[in-house]
Image 1: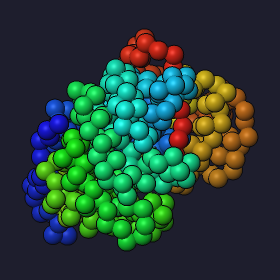
Image 2: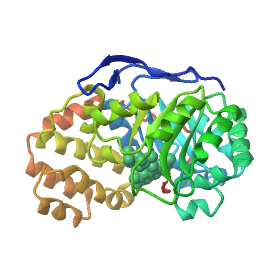
Image 3: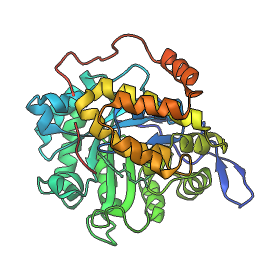
Image 4: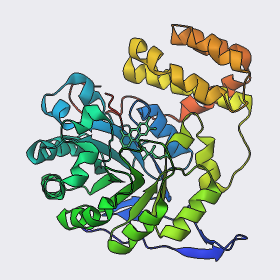
Length: 370
Ligand SMILES: Cc1cc2nc3c(=O)[nH]c(=O)nc-3n(C[C@H](O)[C@H](O)[C@H](O)COP(=O)(O)O)c2cc1C
């Protein structure tokens, strides 16, 4: 699998002396054009279709599903297959798979491609025990030979580009990503994403992007920098100092798509209350359509705090919403708090693609961790 090299298109200098990168510039993963240098992170329990669509609307050039179990795909688990649901306004979209058996991963990749994904992403970063104890996720960084066989099997199975997302290694201070990364490229990876924390660190400490810079210098495919990117200033600094093709944003975008706009366009104006409510209501409605009312009502509770916090609404308001069982009641309560959101919601809903854009002709619907 070949890839165009992204390099570091430095176009101007800013006031801090850091070279400015145009985040609205496109780059390539194999033959897939990614229109901006911002990627929305895969997050288990978060990256539902509504999250990905919203990410695209707010400036992410590439969005990704949460990690999907290749065993679940192999056994045609209905809930797992639901993760392979692709909407027409998500492209370009990567679907991420995890597992440790090359043949099963290859088969899962075929299903991912058939579902309409533009890229298949392989998870070599998940630090969660439930996954690592099966030999998948970050543990594969200590088994480079098997990791390469997995990448080769996946690249062989599909015509779409294969990307890999990884941590720096399993243990604190590990530099395994620097030796494994180039081998994965040789095996067929068209792009690498590095979250330079160890698996043991989980999400503590900070992401050490000096490793990202080193990885960039060792491979001739685009590298995406993941970890602690929460602002345009930070994105510019990491892009300029590492030469990465793009930055990936995860936690910073939870309940806060406006962060994506700030990063891509420098638009610092925060949302009005009406805009917050409009985005949240749309998110609720879309997620109910995707997961069904029963799963969605529990799943959505964490999003209420994410959207309504940051000083946007008084704290007790969130407490009021999380105790409501029916999402329709949540929507009613939100609209009561910001009636001016209604025309905004109508405008947003009018822009959604009509009809059912699901391309997978299979029973549908999943959640892991990473
Ligand atoms: C709740 C949560 C779930 C995650 N799930 C995944 C996942 O399924 N696959 C994956 O590769 N990374 C996963 N990650 C890691 C993120 O993609 C990202 O690399 C990490 O959060 C660092 O970026 P951030 O500082 O912008 O959040 C997850 C992170 C969080 C917080």
